[in-house]
Structures are given as C-alpha cells and as structure tokens.
Length: 611
Image (cartoon, rainbow, N blue to C red; front, top):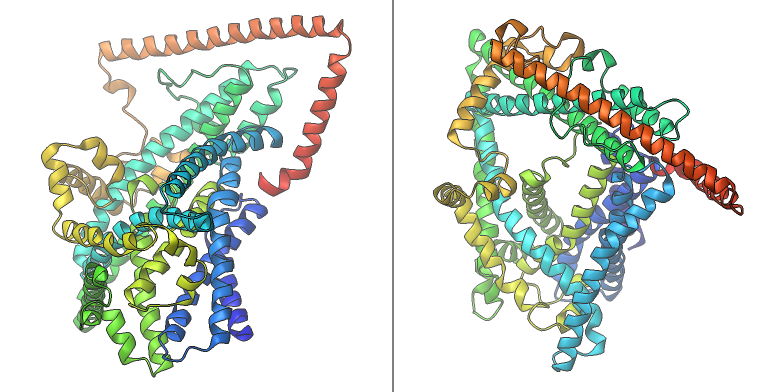
C-alpha cells in the first residue's frame, strides 16, 4: 500500500499545483497559494481513495493490511479537511479580505471576524451534547461523533441539493452545446449579460480611482495618512490610468469617507474590490465574445464548404454524451430515492445501479475501478458545477489567471467542507455494510442518534424531489407566481432570468458580438465606441433643465469636497494639539514610537507572505 499512497499523493499534488498555476492571479501571495494547494491536495486525495475503498470493501475476504492502510488515509484526509474548513482557510481568508494597512491590524480583524463563528458554534455544540448526554441518548465517548455528524449533516444538506440541480443541468448544457446555432444564441444572451456587468464594473472602478485621486489632493505630503493614500493610488493605478477618471460624477454615497484611518481602510477595500471585479468581468466578457465569434465563423465556413458531415458528427456525438449523462443521472436519482430501503428487501440492491454494477464487476478489478471512477467523477462534476453557478457565489468562482486570494480560499473551503459528505453519500449508494471510511473517520458518527445514520438515508429523498422540480422548472414558476424577487435574485442560478431580461440581453449581446465591441475595455477609447460603451450621453443631448441639474450636482460635489477638506483641517488641528499636550507628558510618545516600530517590523516580515 506504500506505492498506492505515494501514487495518490503525487497525483493529488500535480492536480493541486496545476490548479494554482492555472487559476491564481499574479498578485496572490505565495503562502495563500501554498495553503490553497494543500487544501486541494487533501480534497483530491479523498476522492481518489473512494474507488479503492469500494473495491476492497466489496470483496468477500477483505485484506486486513489494506483495510488498515485505507483507514489511516481516510483519517488523515478527513481531519485535515476539517481543519482547513474551520481553522486555516477562514482565518487566512478574513486576513486577505481585510483592507487594513498593517499586519497586526489585519490579523486582529481576522480573529474578531472568526471568533464570533467559533463561539456560536461551540455554544450550540456544547448545549446539544449536554442535552443528549443528560437524556441518556449519548455517552461521553460519542462526543467526536457529534462533531463528525454536525459537519456531515450540513454538508449533506447542501451537497444533495447541488447534486440534484447538476444532474439536470449538466446533460442539458451538453445537449444545448451540441447545436451550434442554439448555443450561439444562448451565448449571445450571456454576452449581453456580461456586457452589462463590465459596464457596471468599469463605472465602479472609475469612481473608486477618482475618489483615491481626490483624496490624494486633499491630504498633504506631511500628513500621517499620506502613505496610506499613496498606497491606494499605487494599487489602483495598475488597473486604470488617471486620464480615464478626469470627468467622473460621484453619487450621494461616494463621498462618505472620513479623512481618518478608518476612512482610508474603507476606501482601500472598495478600490481592491473594484479592481478584482473589473478584471474578472473583463476576462469573462472577452473570452465569451471571442468564443461566439469563432463559433459563428467556423459554422459559416463549414456551411460554405459543404462540410455537413463534421457538423452532424459533432452534434450526434455530443447528444449521445448528453443521453449517457442523463442515464447516469437517472441511475443516481433512483439510488438516492431508494437509499432508505437499505438491504431489508430481497432485491433492494437492484434499485441502485451502482450497487448492481459493483456486483457484476466484483471479480474484475479494472472494471470495478473504471465503473466507480466514472460515477464518482460525474457525481463531483455535477455538484461543483452547481455550487459556483449559483449567483450568491458567482463573484468567487475560479477565473484563469485572475482569481484573487479570497476567491481561492473560499473555493478551497467549499471543497474541504463538501468533499467528505459527498464521498460518504456516494459510498452509501453502493449498499456496502462496511467500508474503511465508515469504520475509521466516520465510525464515531454512528453513535449519534438519528443524525449519525438515519438522516443520511432519508434526507436524499428531498434531493429527488428537487431534481424533478428543477427538471420541470417548478421553482422558477413558483418564484414568478409569488413574485419572490429578492429570493430569486440571490439564490437562483445564472441561467434563470426573466424573458424580458433575456430579450434585452440578446439585443445587447448581438451588438457586442457583431461590432466586436472591444472599445468597451479600452480606457483610452471610452466614448468613441458604439452601444453601451460607458461614455454616457453627449453634452448637446441634455435639455436645459437636465443641464441645470447636472451643474447643480457638480457644484454640490465641489461643496462636499470643500467640507471634507475643512473637516480634515479641524482634525489635523486637534491632532496637533493633542500631540503638543502629549509631548509634556511622561514618556507616552516613546511608548507609542516603540509600538509603531514593532508594528513596522511585523509588517516587513510578513509583507511578502500574505499581502
């Protein structure tokens, strides 16, 4: 088993390293990359252990040495994923998302953000454990099982629903892509949607850069805040030139930044987010526009040359793959729906396609591995396809070369949190009574009433209900009937839009594709392009009343900047007075200087690690 363990480790390491190299942005710190890669390594390793565990556990005579080795691998990968989910990834993610300027301030903010989660989770867990113990349903030895069961229940609730959506959407997406004309129309609508997102991202980036530039004008070079505003301008200048933010109009809330340390932190956080969202939207937009243009050119070329055989072969091949995926989906759903039957009925194994094929291929090691691997990869693909297609996570999915540190860490946390429940749910579909996973890492969970075992058998029925609801668009009709706009806009998936929005996106997307509207992404060309390039209406198109309102807004903005400058002078005067008073004290300045020196030393040490 040593060779097997080394092979699993090498494959997991290669996949993790490739993922980091392909997705991570150049600005990601190397320590963040190392943490994410390590988290991915254990997640991938856990998935790769499943086929071997199933194959070994399906034998009538199980090799004891292999069972012990698999148990050790399960314990290692499971509890490491648990630590990455609840300790490493959240703390580092909160650190990198903080916009404070010093290491100590960012780490303090990270601990404050996570301590509340730990306290609430700990209190709920302790109360639940005490309740079960005093009721006689749990012993002190079963406490580790409560921890495993709590994590597994939460993961299973989410995994089953995501899996159900993916089992419908993955075959549907493949079928849609088989017809180039239909896919081109669908992609054009998505181009229109991304076109709007790029405009919004560009507008926010310009406003953020203009705010930083104006802050630089307000703060003198001798001010203690000068180094902070210079750092903000340096960070955002790489994304947008100053020439593009000369005539930016500010909204009512854009100037609500105090000229103090907290105001600089808030402004820096806004600028960082604006840069990330713009680069992400820009990449998605340009990639999809080029893909649609290439598809249409290729389709036109094949039709002109009369190469209809290639088009037919492609369409038949993809539709065959979609049908095969639908068969896999139906088999998985049937197995989930009949999971609660267990082995109580004489022919209950026949309801699970995975269990039935496992018995057929039991004597064939290669066949067993291949069958389990196909189902498992499809299982994982459907789940994670759904996860980052939800709008609530759409800002954090992986984008090649433009994935920021926070998105990488969030993705790693999601993988670490859902991989173990996903593998456990898959193994239960095999109807095996004993496996290395259930006898090792998840063995304590069996001592917990209901949530330890029964919940994992009965809850998947809800996934089957959700599967048919998605297939027949029940949720979309229900949301539209009751006008649950807020719920729909936050929890539905990217493809679920109103027909009116689809029509508008189609018009916008056609304009972008046919005109090759790359001027939208060129700051020097803004105002020269066509539809929706972010330039705004021309000056001569305003009516007299609109011109008056615009002039009033400009005067109001100037007045607000003057008021901000006055507040800054007052604060600086008060600060100077306090400094003079402190200078007559008993050495407080020396202590403050020592603290500042210590903070600067920490910043210099950790600057290259987590910045």
